[in-house]
Amino acid sequence: MKRKRLLRGFLFGYLALVLIFIFAPIVFSIIFSFNSDRFPTIPLGSFTLKWYETIWQDPDVWEAARNSLIVSLSVASVATFLGFATAYTDYRYRFKLKPLYLALILLPPTIPLIIMALAMLAWFAKIGLAGQVISIIIAHTVLTAPFAMAIIRLRLSQMDASLEAAAWNLGADQWRALRRVIIPFCRPAIISSFCLTAAVSFDEFAIAWFISGLNKTIPVVILEIVTGNIDPQVNAIGSFVFLTSITLVVIAQVVFMTRNKKEKAHHG
Amino acid sequence: MADALVEFDSVVKRFGDFIAVERMNFTIDEGEFIAIMGPSGCGKTTTLRMLAGLEVPSEGEIRMQGRVMNMVPPHERDTPMVWQSLALFPFLNARENVEFGLQMRGVDAVTRKNKATEWLDRLEIGEFAERDINSLSGGQKQRVALARSLVTEPKILLLDEPLSALDANLVIRMQSMLTRLQRELGITFVYVTHSQSEAFAMADRVVIMSHGHIAQIGMPKDIYRAPQNRFVAEFVGRNNIISGRVNSITGKLVTIDADLGQFKVQLGAGQKPAAGDAASFVIAADLVHLTAGKPKAANSIECSLISEEFIGSVVTLFLETPDGSEFKVQVQERELTDMDLKHMGRVFLSWAPERAHFIGDA
Image (cartoon, rainbow over all chains, first blue to last red; front, side, top):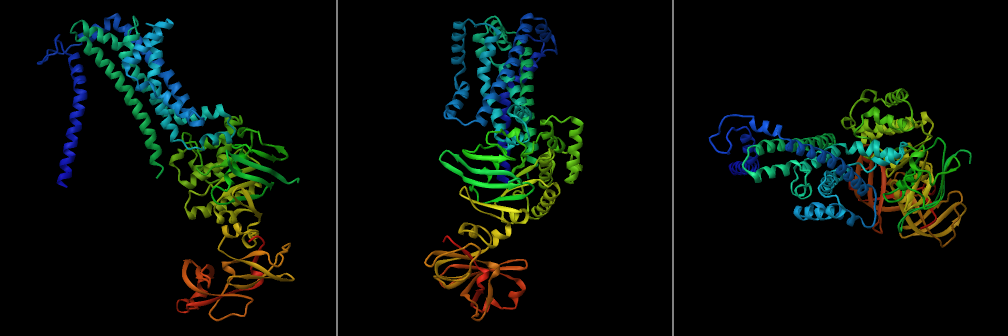
């Protein structure tokens, strides 16, 4: 009994340390974003919203925020659509080269980001698409579609195998069954996948840095500010980015988990 | 042929090299309750899925009211199905589930709601109409599934082992509900099951399938008392099967030489074995007499008791015959208490020739 409690205490301590390790820099960044001193030192200066005002008035930051928003929303829409289409194809059809098909779809996340970013840059330069917002959207879609596919595929694997046939049996043709049964069943996964792909795209730096050219996204602007000088503006932007991403991720988790729990609870 | 609702004409279904259904010929009449029964993998579910258009026959024709249905897609048929898993839509409530089929047929919202409510009330689950599917019990879900299939007023209802997930008491209640419903509606029920008690309790006719073939079609009583072949005899009920050769035939009485001795069996209509033919006969466990002394009956075997299985008023005894095979006897529990079986050791089993049923193919 005593050993068990000791072990529990140890594991809790370990978990706390891991979380501190991950979140301490973010927490400090948020704290310093409200600090009046130019340099991040302790003791802190007075409370200020100066840095937020600076970025509020900075047209470059606005431009980047606008780009990031357009990119992440477009990426989330296209990647989720592609993810659904590929997952449904996998669920519904049997064909000879299916393992190859799956491997090909799930390949992009296994490629090192830098390699992928360079390859994308070379390719876009060749076809005359480099440095545009659309090129970041394409590149991020390639990167995130596999995540969308994995999430929706997991949901489809939980579906009663007769559900779609039941819809046909009651007079729905294939399209109506898809619209009225498959998509509603997958809705939690579709929402999660939309939020997660948006979050990944919103945060992504490496590919965006290589490809964006003059159409910078937020992470690219942050790097540019940091490389220039030490500027607490970065803390303010960082806090904003963190808040956006974490909100999206939490929504994704909550939507997906509650649905599963609800369905499981009544199966006993 | 005017009454035939569905005709299977030499229907074959292959999956790759596997033959699921082989040259199936039978008809389903309008308004009858037909059960298709057999062990798993016998082709019964494939047969049902072909009726619903979920599988396309590899050969032959399926006709409904004279129309060839082979290539008609599922959504253009009027063959609703109650699924083994129920396959209710979890994101819709009970009433919305029932309305689904009507909505697909373009029925307007008011009529839809009225009809759904009417059917939910009829199946005694009106009070759960607005409830989430996952919050209903097994029996309630079953009724929603039935209402969903019947709301479009089809001519035929397909049921794929719908009661297999329910507990025994509920199964009995649902059985009587289904038979009552079928009588009232007067529509055709095609009921697939592996459960003999379900099939026999509800169906007007039973189709027994084995390895994609029809082993026998008939009324439950005929299948129970007069199995046409060894498969049906073994699959159905507590039958004892004895095999041997035909020794002689006198009138309607055939004498069979078996390892256990000589037995007399009365032939059924149309059965014409020849002397020397391999032959078997079936004697049902509940038609055997049990006596302590050697009886004067035409057929008897001396056995020793191995074990007994007690289910309420009926007891099944497992006995060992002189050649080491098992023999089952069913007796009323109260008859048995008079006999003091435990101290008898050996007993005699006997039956009259007309109680046994002759099977041609051994």
